[in-house]
Image 1 (tube, rainbow, N blue to C red):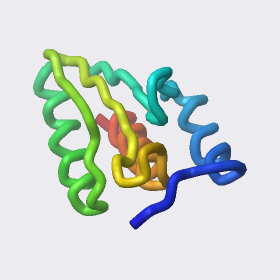
Image 2: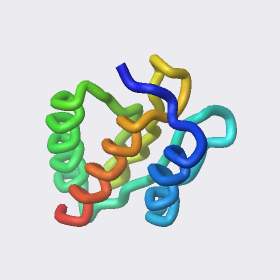
Image 3: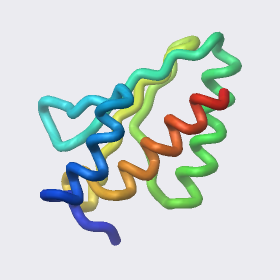
Image 4: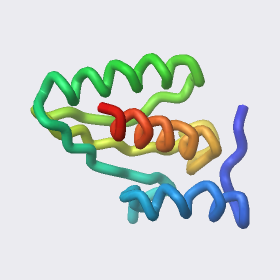
Length: 100
């Protein structure tokens, strides 16, 4: 089990992500980002890589894919907000997208 991010830990985890294009959702404690790829195959390949990594850390995104666009929302339902797992998965997504 993970804990909800608060205070300085929250700032330390989220600040680099917000600087890299993630945004806080207005209606709940979650972050979101839109990833754009060259085509559907690249977008789906990235999603496949992320699915494998998400399964390994047992933390799964809310996401949707339309052609070359993947919309992602991260939150931890067990804590009703953002946790270190969200920050970890967001960083994995960013790193994998850079190498896609």
